[in-house]
Image (tube, rainbow, N blue to C red; front, side):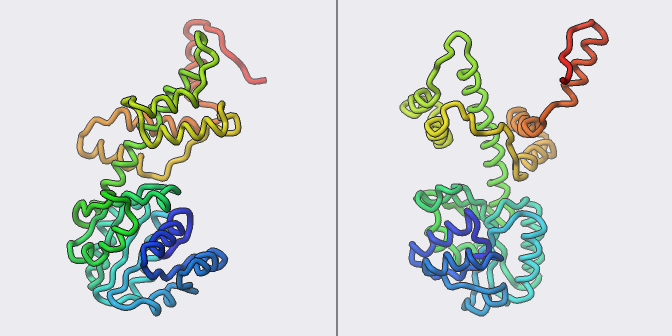
Length: 297
C-alpha cells in the first residue's frame, strides 16, 4: 500500500484485519511506523516495496490524482516485472486510467482502477469498490477487494477505466445529493414562520421511513448534534475533480445533467468572499432603473 493517508491507512488496517500481509509505504516515516506497529511490513522506498513482495506482485496506490499518481506508476513500472499488478484506488480521471493501462500493458504489467467510496467510515463498515481491469488481473486481486468491501460492495464493472468512470458519476450524484440536503436544511434554518426548528430532530426523524433517508442524511444528524447551527464552520466547499469530470462527460455525450452541473457551480460560488458577477448585476440594476445598491464600508 503506497500512501497511508485517511483512506490508505484505514485500508491497510482493514486488510490486515482480514488476514492479508501488507507492505506499507508513505513519504512520512512516522506514519509508516504507526502501521508497522499494527502489523504491516514497513518499506523505506518503492524499491524496498518490490523487494518484499513475491510474484505476481500487487501494489495498491492511494496518492493524489494526476502527476503524483503518474510519477508513482512510472517509477514502479521500472521496478516491477511482467505479470505484476498496479491498482490505483484514488480518484483519477478515467481517461488517465485507460492511458496508464495501455502503457503498463506494453511492459507486460496489469493496471486496475478501483473507484473507492466509503471515506473514513470504511475501516469499520467496509468500502464500496468499483473495479475496472482485465478479467485475469481482477480475479487475482479479488480476495483483496472482498476483504476491503462490505458485503455486496464490490463489483468488476468493466475494462480498464470503467472503475474510475463509474466512481466519477457516483461522485457527481453525490454533489447533487449534498446540494439538495444543504438547500433544504437552509430553508428550515431560515424559516420566519417557524424560527426555532430543531434541525437535528428533523434530520433524525427523516432517517425513519422517509424517502429522503440516507447515509448522508445520517451524517447530517451527527453534524447538527455536534454543532446545531454549524456556527464553527465556514461555508467553503472544495471539490477534488470528479464533479467537473462528470459535467464535462455529460456535455461530451449530449446528456443533460442540470442538477449535477448546478451543484458544482454552487461549490465554486462558496469559495468567493464576494461575487464580482453579483456586483455587475447590482451595478446594472442601478444604471437602468436607479435601484438601490449596498456599498462597501
